[in-house]
Figure 1 (tube, rainbow, N blue to C red):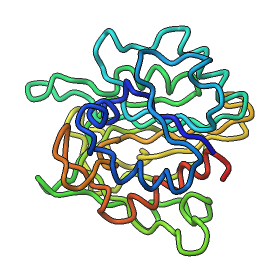
Figure 2: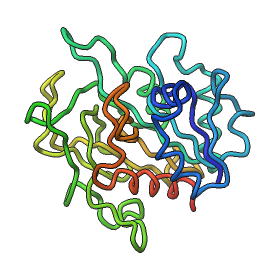
Figure 3: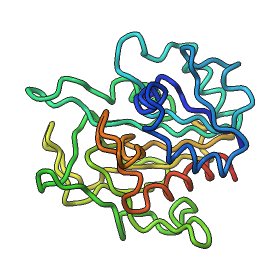
Figure 4: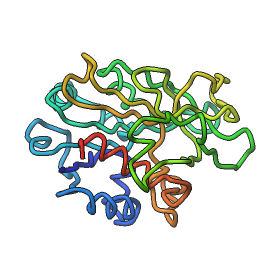
Length: 249
């Protein structure tokens, strides 16, 4: 299995600059994969994706210059339909009067290519400053990403805040009922933190995972662009199971 990070993803950009943001995740994936690489010179192309089994996007930076081009969208559709695995990790939307950046901006465009609606929301714990955990019935028991095989079962995923998506494919992780949407007041009920797609017309022979946060894979001692949480709960186990599933490993 060969894994490629999109170098225009937020978490990847920070990691490439300072070398520690994704240190734990990269090290864990290197133990699973034959190669773990980052793109470093602009948009994704067919040639850049060639030879890789899984592409990881850690929230495409919302600057106009980093919008997905039509050529990128075509290349990504072909990559997935040809059997590749795509992990699309978005982030929270904007918060009028407080935070002007909509981190779902470009991710929502790519999600639509696979029939997924990524919502411009800002969900966090109803207890200000607290983290949110997804546990129990919020996790899709029986799915190989959650069950993970012997010693790899996921019991909890911990995040700071996130956007949301609505049910499509496999509802892998539901939002906690205790979360609230600061941006538009939408209820957490029936909304998802993560979904999985396979065996659909939209993905052809490949697989897609859409997550609504990327900061939770950052190292615990990193604070920018937000607090890293990879050591919390089963976050590392979860992301490794996701990549294994996407790469059919």
